[in-house]
Amino acid sequence: MHRLALIVVVLFTCNPACAMVGETESLADFRSRPEAMILGTGKNLCSAVAIAPSLLLTAAHCIMPGDIYKRVELDAEGRPIFKPSAAVMRHPQFDIKSYLAHRVTADVGLVKLKEPMAALPVPLAGPRQRIAPGESFLVHGYGRSVRDDRNSAATLRAARLTATGQPGALQLRLVDPATGNNKPGVGACDGDSGAPVYQQNAGRMEVIGVVSWSTAANNEAGCGGLTGVTPLELYRGWIIETARKMGIELPR
Image (tube, rainbow, N blue to C red; front, side, top):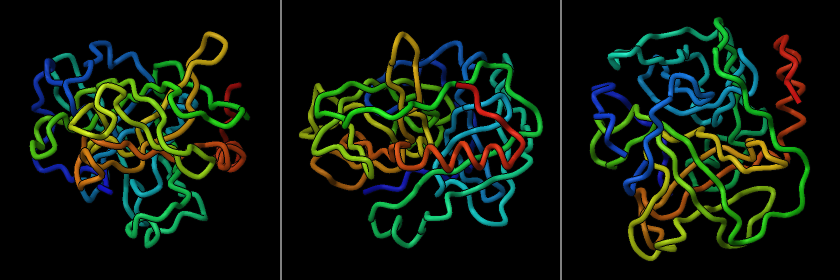
C-alpha cells in the first residue's frame, strides 16, 4: 500500500486541464465546493471536506502532533491563499505504527478553521446496511494526476469508483470498474489522503468515508489500482462529539 499524503516542494503549477490518476474529471467550480486542500508546516499536502462551515474532515495521518495546518485557497489566477486553522484533532484510536505497517486503524481527523468556508458543508452518512461489492462511490481530491509529477497536484478532480473485495466497517476498497485493478486505471494518488468519499442518499450527497491509501494495479506500490478508504460508520459518534467540544454543531 502507498501512503497518500503529498510532500510539496513546488506548489500549484498544475494546468487546469490536467486530470486524479487515470485522466479523471477536473472540477472547474472548485472555489464554490466543500472540498479543501490542507497544508502542514512540514509541507505535507492532503485533501479534506467541510462537514460544517468551520470544520474539515480528513485522514488522521495527515495531522501530525505539534504541526500547524492551513487551508489553501486558489484565487482566480491560481495563486495560493493560506488560511490558518484554529485546532486539529486525531481520532484517539489512530495508531501511526499500524498505519505505516498497512494495518487497519482509525484514520480519521478534524481541522477547525479560523475562517469559515463559503461553500455549503456536506452531511455525514448515517447508519446503513453493509456495503455490497459493486456499489458506486464518488471521490473528490486534490492529489496528483501523475504519481511521479509533483506539479500535477492542487487541482480538484473527481473519480467514480466501485467497491471490491469484502467491504466492512473497518475498511473499504474501491477500484476503477473499467480496469478492476488488473491494469492501471482511475484512483487516488499522493495528496488525496483525507479526500471525501461520497454516496448519494435520498437525492443528496453524503460523506461515507475518507481516502487513506492506494496501490498501483495488481496491488503493487503506487496509484491507479486500489483506493483504500476508512468508512465513517464506527467513527461518526466521535466526529459529532468532538465537533461539539470544539463548539461546532454539525448540520443534519
